[in-house]
Length: 151
Image 1 (cartoon, one colour):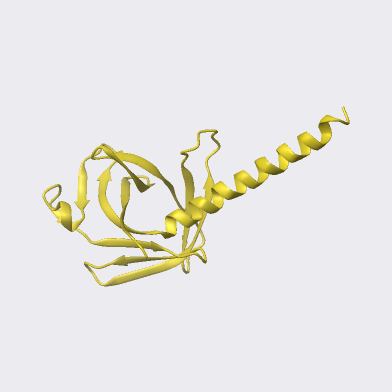
Image 2 (cartoon, one colour; image 1 turned 60 degrees about the vertical axis):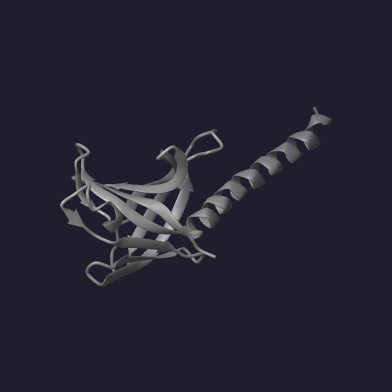
């Protein structure tokens, strides 16, 4: 039993550091992009609001851009109505053994107490994998896509 203790300890440490590294990697990935709203749909999937590039999908358009920073702050800009909101965010890796996993995204807007919860991950979009963020409320689904890589 004593022979296997060092091997077990090394395996445990490597596993712990790998798990921490996956979380850090997710944090780093989310800040690499400028996130653009794709659409707002009802729970049945009907698109209610689209971004300006997809104006043919809905009667109403809005230009929402989401930016995450390394210090766990975010900035949400409504370029259509010249409004800005900010706050803090956190990422929590989903409980899965699959290497390409989703993350729970918690966003707390300034002067608010409760978190706005979403999912950050990768999805298949127009035959290519693209980072995405989805939020669901009682009535709507809000979708953001990674639009532009930040240098």
